[in-house]
Length: 169
Ligand SMILES: Nc1ncnc2c1ncn2[C@@H]1O[C@H](COP(=O)(O)OP(=O)(O)OP(=O)(O)O)[C@@H](O)[C@H]1O
Ligand SMILES: [Mg+2]
Image 1 (cartoon, rainbow, N blue to C red):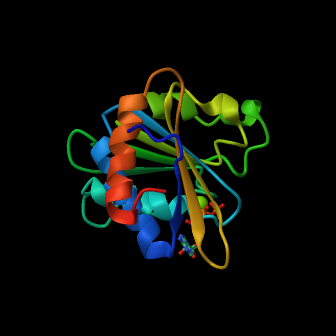
Image 2 (image 1 turned 120 degrees about the vertical axis):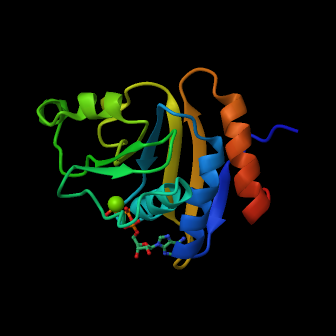
């Protein structure tokens, strides 16, 4: 059965990371992942989990790129070059154009971009649309969509992985 509901509850930061790692099973080289959600919702945390799932080279601890704009990581083939960007501090697309963002996206085997909802024009192509938000209490919610045409099969793989850990939403 195909489910349209794609919202899960993440009980703590460890679970957010665990779900990130599980998502790796659905990724392909060249993928783009846009991360949205309010300040402190868990975007960097889930990115940390995704990178962990890609088996990074030692010493690659994921930190927030809020000030650096872009951080680069090396992981195992086929995701050798991983880009982690954060658009929080950019005002508009003119700001973005001067950063080398588009070249960095093209060179990356996987690109993860926080605050993509702030500058939707920074979506380079279709991709996974991950939305984190505050839930009741201290927990978070996760919504997963595919932005662009097709992608249903990709989503199903990702959903199945998440459901295997958290149960169907
Ligand atoms: N499911 C969760 N439940 C409770 N706390 C969580 C959960 N997931 C992550 N956190 C915590 O939320 C805090 C903020 O996480 P994180 O830095 O990943 O947010 P962010 O969305 O990247 O923030 P920013 O908007 O500043 O980039 C961290 O302390 C993290 O451990
Ligand atoms: Mg962050």
